[in-house]
Length: 315
Image (cartoon, rainbow, N blue to C red; front, side, top):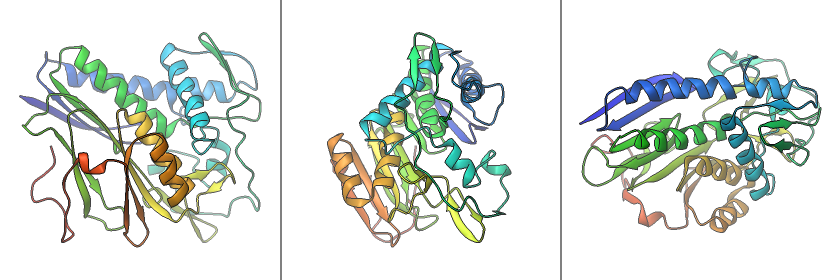
């Protein structure tokens, strides 16, 4: 028997499926995600990340889970050569992303005439349960926060007795344990260039899928269309020719990180980065052309030849 729930959290919609286990697991999962959002949201002035961002170089004491996500963010910056960079908050705000996305106006005045590269993570200090940022550094943990939360929650719900679980946080999907039907957990990969169409469905015994795209969180500034994926090398929204990247990996945090880094890098360097990290992926160009990287054939269970979506909903 499977139970499921949908609810807003972390600026997106959560979809949880829990198979078996004691009663109350969905309620626990919802409360846990709310707690993590309260610690990591840059839109809450009392969150741990907001306190760190406004500390002006002073040490800030953090919870163990926030120290853990911060360490992973710095590691991701290092392993992607800076293509994933959590220090893009000032650039995001300059582009107009100053509040939760659903509250943003569709248009706004032009941003700064010039942009500057993001400062990067080299000056971030983490010792025990304390951290401090250089005065010019401010963090946004949006992407890695959702991915890491999905990983934490999936492992936690299974540890609490669930036979299986699927955690989908705005497209960052982590599955573990027994699916509700035979054949594995099936995750649809949307064609971001063609609404209501799928590129493929993948079947997983366990693991994660995440998509990064320039085509969803968009708005206009000074007559120009901008989006939320900042190229840390310029401090401006990415101009990559890649429209979307979907990554299949063991953990949602790394699928999210590598998808974002590969999109910003572009087709050839992005594909090379994904191959270096031995993940499967699909990079989609603006004309809908899809480039597969790594062992995608191991996971694909249905690929449309006519366009459209699967004749049956994904589990």
